[in-house]
Amino acid sequence: MSTTTTRRIEYLPRSRRRTLVAVALAGYPVALAVLAALKHTGLNRWLILAVFLLLLLTTVAALGVGYRYARGRIDGRRARLDERDLALRQQAYALSHRVLAAILIAVTAITEIYLTNGNTLRLDANTFWPAAMWVIVYIPALPSLMLAWIEETGQPADA
Amino acid sequence: MPDHQRKVHNRLAVLRAERGLSRKQLADKLGINYQTIGYIERGDYNPSLELALAIAELFRLPVEAIFSLTPMTLLSEEIFSEPPAEPR
Image (cartoon, rainbow over all chains, first blue to last red; front, side):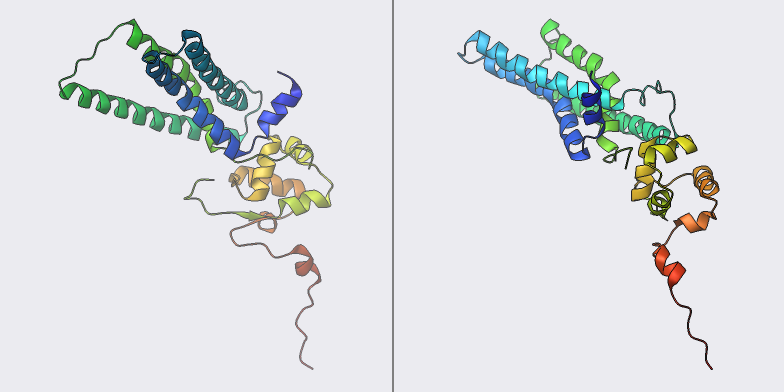
C-alpha cells in the first residue's frame, strides 16, 4: 500500500471511519440476505452474482481500511506503543467483547424465538458456511474495527 | 476521552510553538507517538502523571504551569497584566 494511501487512512475523520466500520460489520450479512432474497426472483443469475460480489467487495474494502487503520497497534507489532496506544487498545478489546456478547445474545434470542414457534433449524452447508465465514472474518477483525470506531480524529505531525 | 474523566487543560501548544517544535519533534523527545501530542493539546487525552512530569521536565517548568483542571488564562495576560495600584 502506498505511503499516500496509508497517510489518508491514518487521518480519516472519525465520522468517515465510523461509516466504514458500519459498512464492514453490516456488509456481509446484508450481502447474504440480498443473495437469499434475489434467489427467489426471476432475475438473471449473473446479475445476482454481480450484485452479491459488489456488496462483498465493498465489505472487504471497508474491512481492509479498518484493519490498516489499527495495524501495528491492535496486534502490538508497532515498535513503540505509548501509553495512549495501550489505553486505546485496551478500550478497543473491551468494546469488541461487548459487541461480540451483544451479537451472540441477539443471535441466540432470535434462534430461540424461531425454534419455539414450531420451526426447525436445519444445519447444512448452506447455513453453516456463512456463519463460519462470519466467525473467521469478523472475530479477528473486531478489535481493529472497534479501535477505528473509538479513536478521535488525528492531527498532522508537522504542525 | 472517556466520559467519566475530567478534562485537563494545558498550554502544550503554546509552549511548543514558542520553542518552534513540531508535534513529531516533541513526541520524539518524549518517546511517544506524535498523535498523542495532538490529542493532549486538544484535551482529548489526559496524560499519565509520568508523562505530564516528563513534559514539565522537558520545558523546565512546574507541572502546574502546563496542566490545570481549570481553564488556563492567557500567558501574555499572566506576564504583562499590571499589578493592582498601591494606595498612596
